[in-house]
Length: 376
Image (tube, rainbow, N blue to C red; front, side):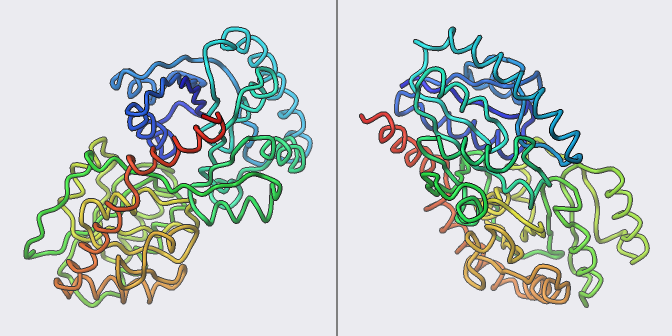
């Protein structure tokens, strides 16, 4: 089966990591992939390293940051024009070379144009809410965009939260399925559970107001213990990072909370920690939660987005009330002070992740969808 995967950006964030892990695990089903990316970038190097065929073509996303009605309309005309031109040109080239189209994000509509021209089945992955996590609007308008989504043979949401959002607010007529993301467990080194003199805690991912690192800092100020350290792993908005540094200094937490920058080998370094925290205001899935679990870290996550689908409070981790720094501080302090409880939820989380959220399981479910739409 020859599948065209269409990525909406050239970076190596969660969407493209998920796509690459999916492609790798589809190899056992004799799926022959071709990936389209819109520009040179880090994902290109990763595709080269893994021997995955790809091509670079200029096309435009049709979900963008809201810049006002007039600008949005002008931008929509330009972006649609680019997509129409590229879809006509590339459809001639691809018509007899692919069997199925797989759009990797709600932002990229090029696959819809291909479906209309080539009459090939379209699987369309929904990996983000849009407005709630990245403040994205529809330059084409919600109704036209919804019609495009509903034309897909199958829409794949990465969580029930995402599926519910689209079915209720955007495209109620879509053929919607929920398939949770999968993490390649071979890329995660689990920690060796041992007694620690100082509990090591990490918060990994992009640094931004939406990821809400400030909530963790405010919670740490309330903890009546100094038997821990926190590393914030990642990069992001410089202005926001400077603000966080200033607050850390103001609270006298310079020796407790450190920024250690982005790490390419996140799967190898998580084993150095015992607790993993996420404080995002909204998560379509929360890859880092599963990465924490696979590394045997005790997880703390907010009751936002899909986090409560992945973390069972008190069993596979702890869920705190978003915005309630006292609740976050109490749960964090419990895990810092109680090593047995920390290890209990860590091992329970690992068992859950390894049995439900691996890339192999994800690929198996996606392949079954391929067979369904291809009627084989």
